[in-house]
Length: 74
Ligand SMILES: [Zn+2]
Image (cartoon, rainbow, N blue to C red):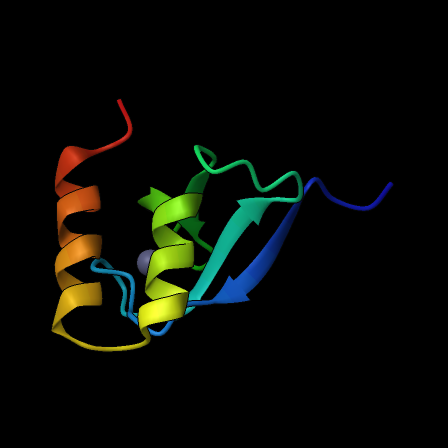
């Protein structure tokens, strides 16, 4: 078994380091947390990442990330 998570690209960047590369569990449940692959910061939930992937880059996707980040993962 090699790794329980996999990386994928988001059209919006990590608010901490500006990376597009995110990490999520291979199970990919809608409520799984998505972390920045570079700095490991919580970015959003997987279903939110799916919405962003569908929407593509833009102000709506950026607003969604901002809301998720501010909500936090605690
Ligand atoms: Zn980051």
